Length: 236
Image 1 (cartoon, rainbow, N blue to C red):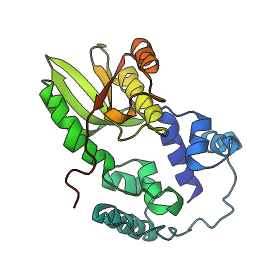
Image 2 (cartoon, helix red, strand yellow; image 1 turned 60 degrees about the vertical axis):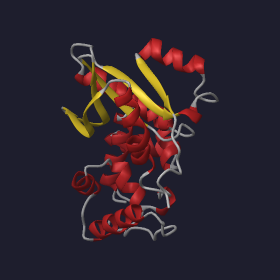
Image 3 (spheres, rainbow, N blue to C red; image 1 turned 90 degrees about the horizontal axis):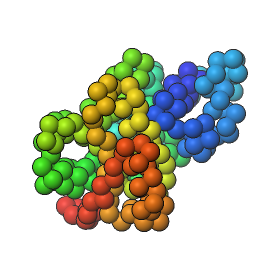
Image 4 (cartoon, one colour; image 1 turned 135 degrees about the vertical axis):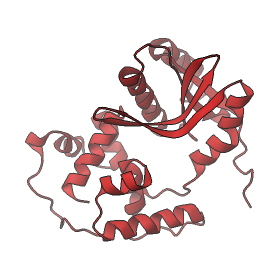
């Protein structure tokens, strides 16, 4: 990856609410490596590797046709000289999404897990609760910040932003909370927008215990919705 692309990727993760340590764990680098990409004063003068490094080989050819096409297309664009930012803008995705399609160590097993959870479980749940869906996967720009709102809906005249995560075993709650806090800090001038994280019901308990959920709700005004979802539904 080019040094400038590393800087853009790390900055995007940092702006999403992740700490330097969390980013280091996410990208499997040291905290000093992350800091050097955030602060130009400590940035390396050049990359050890060639600036034109090609995408790595696909770790495992996925059965998921959507992911397979994403891997092929992102690699083709990168080989044609496109930057991470240009590819991200082309697909309306994040820098990390691009990185995960180029580096085999970050390659996802399935491209559609969160999208399926959102379509098959979260949207029907919100509608059953009386929400009117306004938009999905909406990019919101606040000056230098670009955030994605998974679902924007209205209930009784109140706007809701729902962040969707198909699991809570890793950093997913961290990034969801960071996204929502930034949405409120940057865009909710009247303070009336409700914030919510949607998770499968099996995520309830364990790390995401009742005390933690209540503390986040009280301190940050972020609600949690634990929603039943049959992951095997619709899979042949």
